[in-house]
Image 1 (cartoon, rainbow, N blue to C red):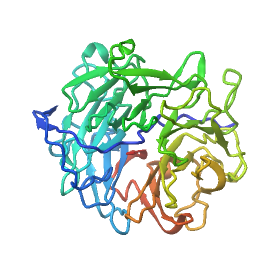
Image 2 (cartoon, rainbow, N blue to C red):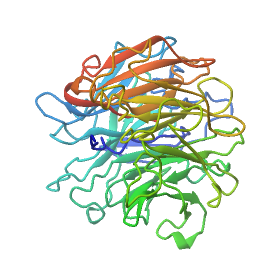
Image 3 (cartoon, rainbow, N blue to C red):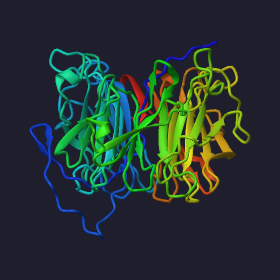
Image 4 (cartoon, one colour):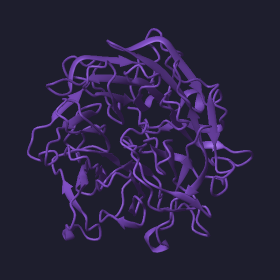
Length: 487
């Protein structure tokens, strides 16, 4: 039996709400002042539109990229959307040696480990939050940081460091910046930012006049979205814990004056005791206006983890006015579900990457599911992506489709340890009203690549599919390109 080492816990957020807040750059740190609310007829800022041209862009992490002679410092590649989608010719490569970006490229920083987008300064350009998981702080190794890179008419450039929590809150090798997420968590119309680490969760509340910390101790993953339909985003922090190898799944919901949640006194901590999974995305898959929580439980069942399904599974916890009902029976989908291509096999890691978007334009969110450990014939760990469709009855296996580098029209071919599907992102790149698929093959040729499949009325089409390798994007060294894609 072949064994997997999980690539990096991922990426990575997932739903980012791009609403307006005010921020100004001062001395490399963020300082904040109130700004007038945008007029009712102001132009909507698409999520991840970094250059304001109306097309969504794709930010791809390459945390293992060499910067000059500095190995594994990390980089972010921004692929700009257009009427024809993205290409390697319209891109920006950002490192900690880029003009205006705080810090400096150092060995093992892992800049680009996590990514999330939102318009943080209310200028109608989306900005990018970048986690550097093992950034050193003074003489403390591996502490980690988070940085904002500013959007503008020419795209992303310059930046500011998010204020660092106190040294006592961040231990050496704490991995702060392991995951980042944005969302309006308190309903004030301004996006907030949350950052996770091994021993610390931090909340930066727009307009960033104060901060708060969670009581979970630490987590590697976070996703955000509105589970209750009230316009405020909930924060979900899946994490592994002794006694619950399937993963604990708590979330914070805005509840002003809830002193029981000290020190985050304006938030209530809600647990889903029967939920399992380490990856998550929030989207309305059944069209009832409430966000639904989709969890990826990609671990195989074993003696100390009896739950789950061979090869991995996803579960859907449907939202409502009070969030997901903990007593509900969630929808469970795996590769042995009727209509889903393939079959559940040991170490497929189905559910290790998730993204949501409306691919066929029917008004229901669809879910892309990565299975980077999928074996194709005799080719181990070639990887695949399964597209599941939303409907009035929720997420089902009906009409599901699977894609790999063996699929006709998909560039390349399946090779050992390509890990196609390590990351997935559903995003409308050409403004046709349907979400395209961007997926990372994290080990392609030893340094990674992304593949882009366009959306069509029936789902995804391989016609005009694009392949962009780390070398095409200008990444040197091992790269670990496409181990993170901003969501």
